[in-house]
Image (tube, rainbow, N blue to C red; front, side, top):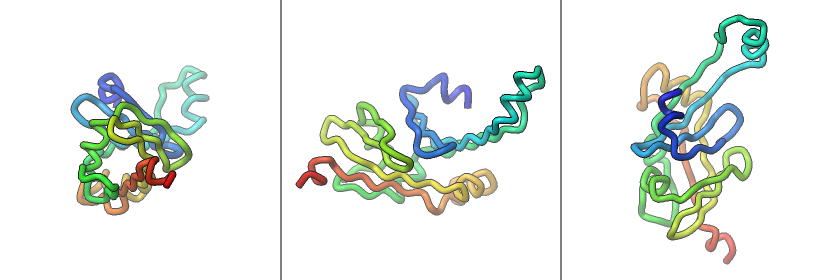
Length: 137
């Protein structure tokens, strides 16, 4: 994950323990499980162990992407100018064409299945994006 962060051009919290990290060549949804005990042990001089990080490529959302546009989720994000967390599961995506609110869902089960089966194990992931001007009308 450190290489992903080093290459990051943007990131946003999706929900507790899940962040989206975008790079020049793609992006990933990462589930980071690190408890307070890891930090407490590290503060006492013990190596930082006991955490878990699983990252799923962002193109898994292409199949579950719903929007008024004709693009895939990956193209939508790649063309965006930035994004911000609104609340758990909802991000504001600024795009030159239209700013949108997007509900992004990727379950803990998806991360577990991805770790065991790869992308074919991701079943619940979806993104629904609505342009702000559609919400205002």
